[in-house]
Length: 296
Image (cartoon, rainbow, N blue to C red; front, side, top):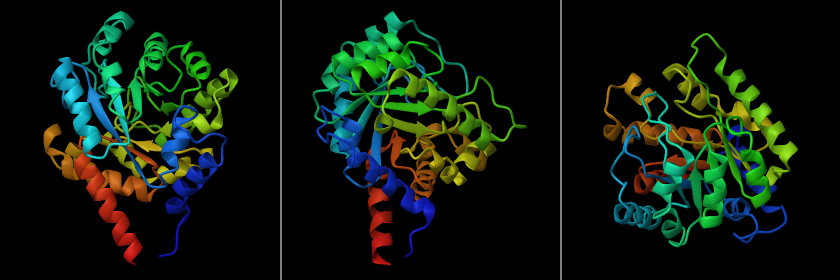
């Protein structure tokens, strides 16, 4: 099968990353991960009472650490640990940096010893700084460096990769969501580069479900290749999101099929990293899709 611009784009991003200096995890873990030359899977570990899908399941350290081990055993390339719900549809309880860190302290350092890279899902620079010292190697900021003015400095000083996610306070069905995401990314990249964050340490995430209508989330997935102009790896996290319910009514735990469909299409359209609650089925789906493509 001839490669299209979209299907070839992740490979171009990977080639640029692995050509950058340093391939050891301690130097640039993103380079090391992308050198696997296949879609990466980021497993979700929510240490929160109010996340939209699995809130409260892993609040206790033994359960959280065991779940981290399970994600790794199922084939996750990265474990994304978050201690404040950033649920995209409202209703989450904001927590202080102190409370967020208190939730992470008995869990994140232990998860970091499992043997695969850990990202910290936070929008607070103080929490990110602590987490990077405690064993995390990636920062996943759902406000793309635009919420905490100190976040870019912290990321740059630690030499950590950053996931820049698009977000909005509220959804506006009247806007061109693709243009809005692109403009947001441009602002975030200006912040990143001004702070000294290297091009080879940046991942972009269109923020499926965050500040978007269901139709806009679908548009971002369908037109993901529009963001290839930034010449950076793309991450997509459509796992269990509400837009699936808008297509076919279902509760969060009943959305595995919709999540897999969205993620397979995201990879076809250029995604290099998939963030998911359901690691084993996602790893299997990606492997089978790749095998089918090779058989053509």
